[in-house]
Image (cartoon, rainbow, N blue to C red):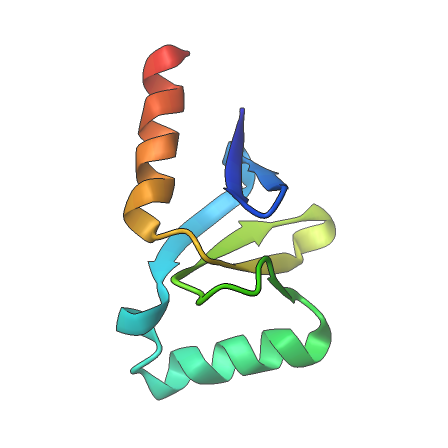
Length: 88
């Protein structure tokens, strides 16, 4: 099953580690540093030019993680996951 993150980007549901609200979590210095380091490594991808509202941490091959910065709210992403699970 795939989840649409916005701007033609989809990820496999089973690869999602977490979905986070950008405004609420970036008040923490640790979170800001984690996002900054991911951007420096090329592991953070901004999906759209709109105002980002969430970020989704996904696992990839060989233990790497990819962070998708999305214009979609965390509640909408969670609704999409619940909707897919009910339909399965």
